[in-house]
Length: 106
Image 1 (tube, rainbow, N blue to C red):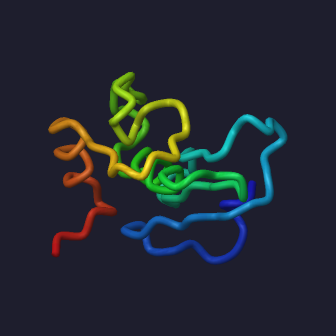
Image 2: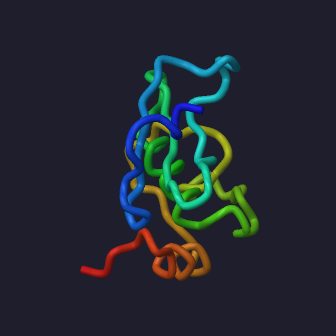
Image 3: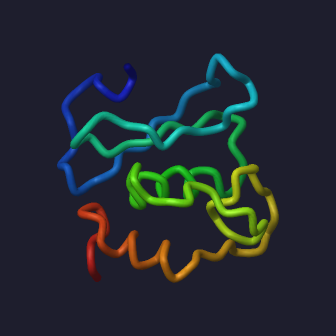
């Protein structure tokens, strides 16, 4: 597994790996990661908001539901977006992100 290579980052950080592609060419990113090794992987073909979408999966955690939101304006919509408008999050998503050990208060 790519994310198991090298020294782990602190568990309060998120590693973002960039790869050429996945075996399934329709997949542009993945927020899955090993326990206590927060990371996501993004392909070269990813669009403007895909990195933020995958990092958000990490911040939300694997138990957060719903995983994807059908509102096209939401960052967690299941289909990659290239719109220039800034995507939105629900209050529930924001609250969960703020509770993540990877979310550092400013």
